Image: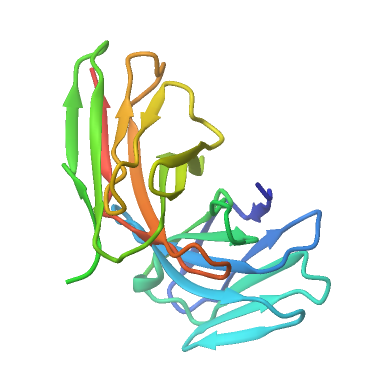
Length: 111
Length: 113
């Protein structure tokens, strides 16, 4: 399966600060998905990006897919304690293949 | 309610024993997956199945076995050959097409002592 590098592995922020996690691939991706896993919970789908340069927003979360479709980012504006968890990217969800996940970025937020 | 159910949530076994983790879904999904999660390792794919009576090995299949006799069920057996079985196991399902999201169960935390 497609391998991606997620950075950083861990990030701690003060509540109200912004946060960004990156997902980088050495090859061109057909699409990329993002998932969030709360502590003690299971991953939950957030969004899928398909088009080059695509930007999607969900309230304080902004997702981008690079122009070359080799990288993606998730940006959270003004973090809240409810944002705590691990964010995973999953590239190249194609028919007949399994989803492969990046190692994730674990976000902690102090109030 | 539609969903994917894993049971039990916590499981303890003695070393050398095989143990089977249950995964059932009523989402009418063709595809089902098993992942293992260890701290700092993300989600690693153990096995997946795209259709009944067919399954493929993932990246870390050694020491595990699966069956897919029914569309809604994909049990995972952790055998005594698995050298380090203590982990959090997650089952997921999805439709077979591209660009589909995966739905995860609550997970089973297996501890082997």
